[in-house]
Length: 88
Image 1: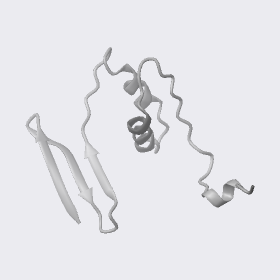
Image 2: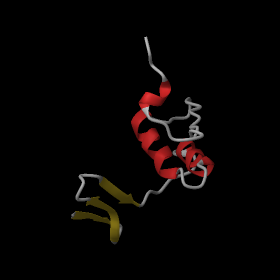
Image 3: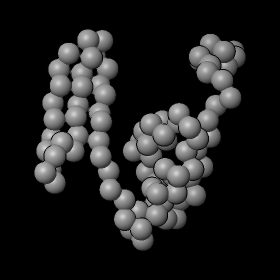
Image 4: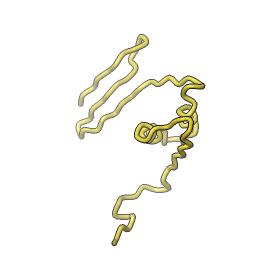
């Protein structure tokens, strides 16, 4: 396991942990300012318990801005691609 830390504002601001299976875990401290980061603040406040990380990942992938009423929905249950029924 590999652990790296980044420092700023007098303390650790981010820690990157690489697990034995190759999974990366990033622990960060973020500061949002009203007026500038309103969409991100709304996203964080609207995230259901246990879904914040997945909401943040999706926002990083697709972007969130003032003109984007992105609504993140939690799937009712986990599924795998074979469950979708993609027969042609």
